[in-house]
Structure formats: C-alpha cells, structure tokens
Length: 634
Image (cartoon, rainbow, N blue to C red; front, top):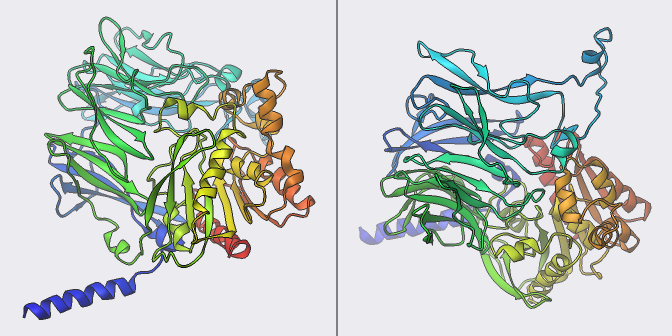
C-alpha cells in the first residue's frame, strides 16, 4: 500500500510538471491582486481585498475577505464596518472626517462668460495648470468634519474653506493625509499651501493641525522645507511622520521624525538609508518601517522613540519584498510580500523567532501551472570601482548550453528602487517566460545602497549611470549562454530616457530598443512637464541657465542631440494623458526615427497617463512589446 501511495504522489507531481507552462500575458492578468486592509477590532482576523481583472469587459472587480491571523480558511465579507476600526471617526465618536471637491476658482470659458454656455475654453494665468493626468479645473479636495447624529454623519464644516489647496495631496494622496488627534480636538492634515509657479517648483508639504473648538490652524512643521507626510499617533499619544530635508528634491532621504514637548527628533538621521513607510507598534514603544536595502525592500524596527541611542533592527531578510504592513497583534506583524515570481500575498511575521508564514494563498493554484524563473544576484565592478548588484532573471527550464537573447532593463524613477517587485506590465517573469534573459542593474540612483549612491544620478543623467548600464550588460554578456548578436534594451520613464540616450551611445551593442514614456528632448520636457521641482533639481535648473550642470544636462545628456548616431530599430510607446513626460516626447522621438530611416513603431495610448491602467490596453501593450522583440531580436 505504501509503495502504491508513493507512486501516486510521484505520478501527480509528474503530471503537474508536465502541465506547467511559461507565463502568458493572459495568465498574468488573471491573477488575483491581494491588498491588506487591516486587522479586525479584536485582533484575531486579517481583512484583505482581492481584485481581479475582466479582460472581456475591460474592468476589474474586487471582493473582501476575513481569515484567522494564525491562518486557515477565509470567509467572504460584504461589509467591513463592524469588523474594522474606522479611522475617519473621531476617538470620542462624535464626528466623522470626509473629503470633497470644492470649487474655488473659475477656469472654464462658460464660467467666466455665462452668456457663452457652450464654450469649452480653459483660461489660466499661472502654472500648475495640469498635473499628472488632469487639467486644473478650479476645484480642490478639502477636508470636512461632519457631526454624527443618531449614528449618521451630517453635512459638516470645511476646515480649508476658501483655500486653493488639496488634501489629500494629488495625485497619490490617501486617507493617511488626514487624521484625528487622540483627544478628538484636532484634525491633522497634509497639504502644500502654495499656488501656481510656487507650487510647481516646491515640494514643501506641511502638516497642519486644525482645532475644532477654536477654528485655529497651526503649522506643525513650520521651517521644515521638504516633504512632510504621513502623520501618525502612537497609542501613547506621540506624533510621528515622514520628512525630507530639502525643498525641491522629491527623492531626498526620507526620515522618521517624532514630536516631543521639547523638540522634534529625527529617529533615522544617522542611518544610511531612506524610509518608504512606517507604523507604530501597538504599545507605542517601537516603530516598524519598510525601506529598500540591497535590491529588496524589508521590514525594520526602531525602538525607544525619544531616547538618545536608537536601536535599529532589520526584521526580515531574503530575496523578496515586504510591500506593506497590514497590522500587529501581540507578537505578530502581518505584512504583504512579493518576489519576482509571485504576486503579493499576506504573511505573518513572528517577532520572537523572526519566522514568516504565508497566510493567503490566492494565486497558489494558478502558480502550480506556471513555470518559475531562476532569479540570480550578481555583483559587478563599475567603471569607477564600485560594487553594483545586478539581478539576472533566466527563462524557465534554462539550459546553459544554449544561447539566449538578452534584455537590459532600465529602471524608471529615476530614483526608484529596483527590488523583488511584481509588476503587471514590466514583469520580469513574463519577459523571461518568452525566452529572454533579463539583466536588471541597480545602477546609480537606486535607494538601498546608501544615500551617496542614491544621489549620484542628479545632474548626471548621461554620465556614470549610463556606464553602469553598459557594465551590467557587458559583464553578463561574457557568459556563453548569452547571444551577443541578440541584445535588447528596454525601459520606461527615466528608463525610457535611458533607452533614447543609449540608442545614440551604445557602440553597436544592441539590436533593438523599446522606450515607454521616455524623455527625448530635455528642453521641451522642461517646457511642458508639470512638476518643475523635478527637472530643476535633476537637470541643474532651466535650459536657459548658464551653470555647468544645466548646460551639460540640456546639451551633452539630451537624447535628441545624439539622434544622428541612431542606427537600431526602436519601438516608442506614449501615453496621451501623461503630463509628467508629455506626449511631445514620444512623438518627437518617433518622427526623428522615421525621418532618419530607422525601423520604428509608435504605440499611442490616448487615454493612458504615465502608466497603463486599462486591462485591454495593457494586453495590447504586452502583445506589441513581445511582437516587436520577436520581430527584431529572435
């Protein structure tokens, strides 16, 4: 009987292996997308959402679930209101916070000229007239506190009445931008109280406290001139937040600051890293935070806030990313986790033994039928003698005796960490599944390798970072299994800029290029992008400034100035509602390629911004991406 049982197991395992296939775009988009919502009020259950895409209907839907914190069966829940604490309700239960759009300024022709009701003119006399993917329409998101009467919130008071400022911050602000104080007397909110040109050139968001009894507003971060965001109180009433030191530098070192009666204390000032997000421990004695480190994002803790010597400890370690903290109960912290072969799932970390246990298994069945990629760490020596981490992702069932086409992946940001992330568009597992080796270098400008490494990209777009890229591909290309006649270079945003720049500076290495929403002309980029603090900092100023850094950025490092050396097929992808890297960048590049006789194709996404959010548009993106590679590289 035992032999029969073992034979059955072996047979089933063999059938599963036979049934496995390489990941396809359709399979990628069929995966459930897991996000942690929080813990139940009693701390016994994890609450989470699973979103799924319906390609035929071009939309997504989601369901919510509850499961025991120690693991086990999940239960679908239709209403979380009785299960989760509601952070919008004041601790004393008397008020509820809400945010609503409030019309402040007239922008449209039919508003300014009521006798011309069919006019669709937009009129502006200052900058910040559009942001991310929306034109300014004169409305601003404001915070209201609404009295709760007979269990229901009623229309309340606008604490930002008449002010042309947004909270939550646009475009990526959320509920964490406005909170109650523990005594229910104050509302803390994040906003940047600047308009027009001042708004466009500054990152100086502040945290304000509005007293509901006096109506007085106080700036809690007065004199702190960088980003100040994510205010959060501990259970003992201590306020903490994330803070950057310098105005105009959106990728500055992000520190955790706490407020004491005497002063503000920067807990991570002397730590050579940058913080993504944080939460307080239940007892208020520690802070858990997520930060990039050595090509991953991990969970850390710092204890004894306010003490002279801060003990900082890394709690997780491995080739995976901790992407969020769902909550804490007793000695367990619940987190979300990904790696390059797996979409996000929820895990429980035991703070005692540091063991991490998977709780949700939303995509387990799907992954039993999908072949995994081998993910390898490599460390190479850069041209200036530094050690650089390069992720190498291999096709499933990789055979070192064969030769493979290989892609250099150029990360965006430009100061975004290249970690064990799982993207539904720039997905390394999917690229490798089509038969490509992917080389993904943690080049200059990546957080997780110290502040100096992270900052070396500013004012040097075409310098050391480009040498880092070429070092990475050259080192991996020494392997016999890399086909040096079939090397490609792909990327988006700053990665798209990198593609445009390398297209004129690659010395024949690459046989194909793909650039998505990349900067092609640094001068026209400066003239049409919306967040001017970004280009001011990274380029050394405006293109008319005479300083050496600006002149080098807009001349030597400007991809359009190297078009005369373009000689390689290039696919150009551009979003129509991308106001960060506006439409002219992609169109100019395509026109230059066409007029110079370069094999080229333009993929224009009129309703997409800097990303691709529509399911069917994303599927077209995938098809065209791999069709181009098949045509020019295989």
